[in-house]
Amino acid sequence: MPVTEQQIVTTLLRERLAILTRIDAVLGDIHQAEDVLQDLSLAALDKRDSIEDLDHLRHWLRKVARDMAVDVIRRAGRRPAVLDASVLDRLETHWQRFDGLEAAEVQQILQHCIQQLSPYNRQLIEQRYRNNLTGRSLAEALGRPVNTVKVALTRAHRTLLNCLRRRLQHDAPHA
Image 1 (cartoon, helix red, strand yellow):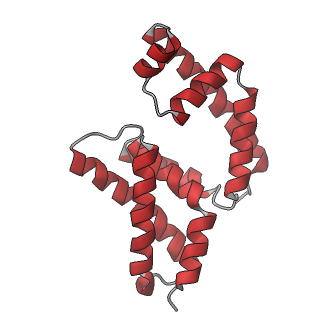
Image 2 (cartoon, rainbow, N blue to C red):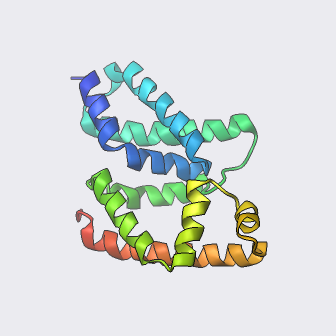
């Protein structure tokens, strides 16, 4: 029996952060990722008669979200800003392990890890992603050399990633 409109909307709301993160990993632009998520939501509602159950819906959402993001890149004639398809293929199996986490849990873990950064690294991460600044723009805003900011961002990302790995290993449901 196909999924209902209510099931689609509930699933989209529950998994919004995970889906948006996957789209943003392809696009590297949160605003475009939001647009793709809106298009994905409409597409899911349009295709609901062909989606068999909730497991099929979750798989369908992940696959179509990625395909839609790649289409955005192709139409713009550019390369993926963050991760290419082969990397995303390898990550998909790891991401599925965390599908059981609620968005609020993931957000809490991320907030905890951001708070563990030094004040300077926290400022870099917050300005980079809150204001969607490139390395060069961030360097200009901070009055620092571009290379210095890029190296500091790389270190901040590594520290953040290590913290996320530790917390997710501890908090994630085990398959």
